[in-house]
Image (cartoon, rainbow, N blue to C red; front, side):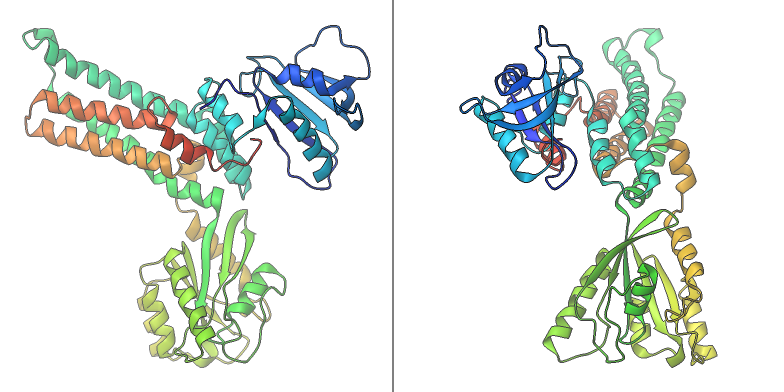
Length: 460
């Protein structure tokens, strides 16, 4: 980690737009700015957090590259807590690349993905949970996801973790008094009180772990796959949900051979929709490959829409598909209600026996579509109220650390109930404390930091 280097990068997407930004951070930020920037008015003293109008010049040729607004932010009052310069130029590949080349030639190096935010963390401006919230803020697919990311950036998760750490630290301190002063009467711990506190901690942490799945729903979206036998109306359903002709619809069996993906919002909930090849026994190698892809995506799906052509009744293939989905969160979509029903009472009872919600629709006319959307939404947001009230949204890394903490606390509780050695109990409680420290960054490694900050784009 070369924190003494001066780094630079383009911080906005390169393309035709009104403004592009080149960010510089480190001790050479202001000297570099002075070398390549000529203000419209003379500057007697550079003031922090003030915009200066001027031109970026090539120091070798003195040719003007662009008219820009330049802002200097003096340490420690900047994003990285280092000296920072941001050059606001016109956007476009050539102009941004040229300015960045001039900055690098003056002694800066190209920043790695997420390196500006990494420096903000290393310099104590933010903790790891806040750094990760920035990624979620950029990637949020819904207003709720945006809200949860903003709450984490504000420090809501960090504050909750710090409260848990304090409770565990107090517990550990009490236990260690017994280890250090076993003969002192004041050091005696009431076993029942210790058990009660451990059980309370375990319950509170388990509640936070449960929020992980709901957070992922709102930030990343739900991986939703549409499956069914050929000509059940899968592609028609996809097109109807998207309100556009995204997939080819044809009466010819096997039209859809590849995976077709698209995204929509249902009541503000982001869905990643996947249309798949119709399930059937085939000899055609291309269609067979498509079916293989479909089965693989089915395993990865969060939600499955099982489309059945109700005008044809329930077939053997339909039942085989439902069996494949019996352990998945699924909705049975009875399509083509614009046609006479071919469902027998026996077939309907068989469907009901699986316990999946059933919605009748016509992908052709749109009838029943709103009910299907509401069913999807209701299935996806179980626990939403708990998530939004807590404003805490742990990601996968947080969840893994919390589960490690839980394992240690549960081991400590087991040891306590067995009247095992107090040293072993203290070790488990200390391990639980270290696990929580990984979340906020007090306990961390370069591997963890690399995994987190590699998710960032250049310039952030």
